[in-house]
Length: 114
Length: 111
Image (cartoon, rainbow over all chains, first blue to last red; front, side, top):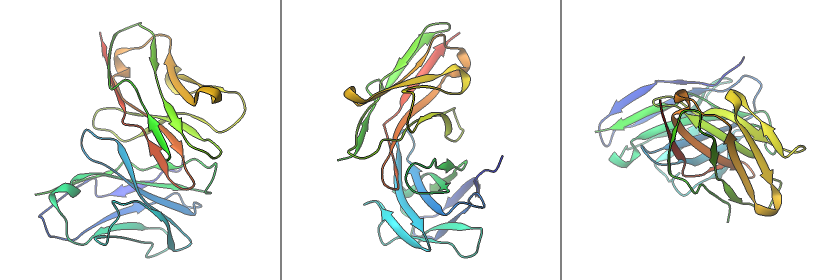
C-alpha cells in the first residue's frame, strides 16, 4: 500500500539555524499538508499546498516558514531561523482531492531545537 | 468557528471494560469525521472515518463510531478494550482543506 514518507525521523538543531523537513507524498496525490504536534498537545494545521501554491495557512505559519515542491516527488517545509518553541513533531500529509478525500499522514519528523 | 471538543482527557480502564470516548464538532459544511490513534512514540494511524451513508462506522481493531448529526457528535466505542489499546485518541473534522483535531484522549488500559 502506498504511504507518505518523511525524512529525517529526528532532527536536532540549534536555535537560529535553518532546517528543511522533507516529505515524499503518495505519487498520484495533488494536495499536500503540514501539521505539527508539540509534545503533549494536539495536532495543529500549518499549511496546505496545491498546484504549486499555498491554499490555506494557519496563524502559526508565519514568515519563518515556507513550503516548496522542488521536484515531482518531494514536498518540503523550511524553517528559516528556528526557535525553541518550534520543537515538535511535524507531520506531512497528502490527499488525491480536496473536499471529501482522506488525508494520508506520514510518520513524522521530530524536531528538537536546543 | 470550526472546532472539535473531546471531553475526556484521561481515561483509565481495566481490560475487558467497554470504552466510549466523546467527540463533538462545530462545522457548517459537509462533514467528514475521523478518529486517529497514536501509540506511544508512533505516528497517527487512522481508526475509522465517516464521509456519508450509514452513521455507524466500523473501523480497525474492533472500534466503531456513531455519527449523530443532531448532536454534532461522533463518539468512539469499543465493547472490550485490551492492554494494547493504551494510546492517545484524536477526533478530527475535515474543513475545506485542513483537518481540525481535538485535544486528544489518553487511554490507559490496566492489565
